Image 1 (tube, rainbow, N blue to C red):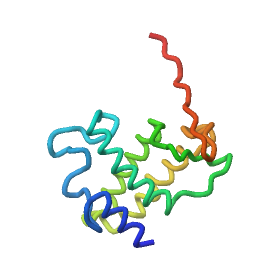
Image 2 (cartoon, helix red, strand yellow):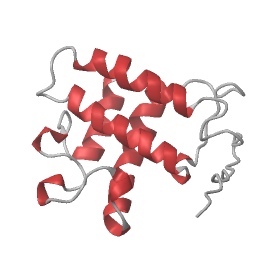
Image 3 (cartoon, rainbow, N blue to C red):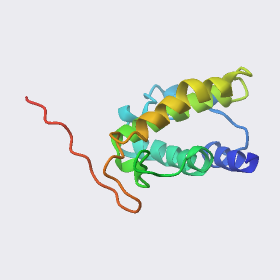
Length: 147
């Protein structure tokens, strides 16, 4: 298990145990916004690539529970903007609560305050993965907005 975490951290940050404590992802130090929904073009793609590494190499192997009709999953989660936004927030909270400068209670707080609610929301039968089935992604219709 430790190897999974270290490998994901090494891939995302360049070294095991490294954290965004030296600066958040997405270039906040350079004055750019760091929440993924504010990014576009190459900045968005680079942030999505790092997020994908974390989701696919740490989050899903450790916390991904079995897929059922009551707990759907989409292997093409990055095609769901809501999932991208929620996973990105979860990843930012992970970095803040598990890095070297995090309090000892940080991981427990992350599990309670961030992981559980996000996974419950995403895996809800009426959540962003509703309609997706194993090996089959389905775009969701966006609600109509009257201009």
